Structure formats: structure tokens, C-alpha cells
Length: 172
Image (cartoon, rainbow, N blue to C red; front, side, top):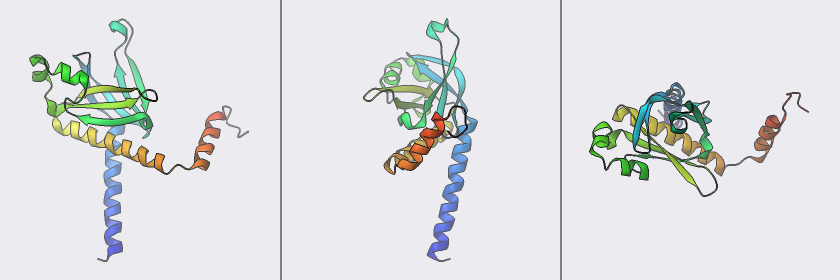
């Protein structure tokens, strides 16, 4: 095999891996959310069309119904493993929490709300393997969006904005 063929094989393997990662994200997975030191029941967490990270959020004081929140992937700042956010660190001081959620099963998604404000959403997977799959998938998607920002194409951006502005879809 020559160098070109080896590169082709590697590229094909990389594409196959990317597709399996994206398929896993689209299908989603049941994850428990940690909010204010409490572990919520398992809910579906997924990524739709490689553009939105979706998770469920409990309503105000459990009076209002639960709602599905969507965050654009480009707004995701990073993902972290373990007890790496203030919320998880504080929760981990309780023995009951550490028994229910080991550090190997926890991860956090940090996203940018405004220019300088970051928010984290903490999750617990049912196993370390699931946590690693979801972590790697989100990290891959975040890195791809960061690369896209580096290679900004103004013409594509303008076309996309015009399509969004074309409410009646007649092209005018």
C-alpha cells in the first residue's frame, strides 16, 4: 500500500467513526441531571441535526411543567469529566451523592450564555462507558464548530442569513 492509499483508508475510518459518534448523539441517551445538589430522574439528552444540544429542565419549583431546552452547538464552550464544576464539587461533599454518582460517571456541559457568562449543566450517566461516549461525541462536535469559526466563509454566512430571513420561502 502506498502513502495515498493509507491516507484514504485512515480518512475512511475517521469518517466512519464520526458517523457512529453522530448517530449515538442523535439517538440520545437517558442521563440524570444534577441541579442544586439533587439528582433528577433520567431523561433523554440528545443532539439534533448536529446543531442543537437538547436536555430536559425541571419547571419552576416543580409547579410548572418540565420543558425541553435546546442550546446551539456553537454556544457550547466545553465538556468536563468528573466533579469539575462548582455544583458537582459542592454536591460531592455529601456521602449520599457520592454513593449515587461516582466521579467516573459524571460530566458537565459548559456553554456561553452571553459574552462573558458561562453556565454549566451537570449530568450523571449510568456507566463510565456511556459517559465517555457522550463526552467524546460532544467534544468532537464542539471542536468541529470551533474549526468552522476559524475558517469563516462570509458568502456562506450571508446565504444562510438570507434563507433565514426569507419567511415566505419565495427567494425574494
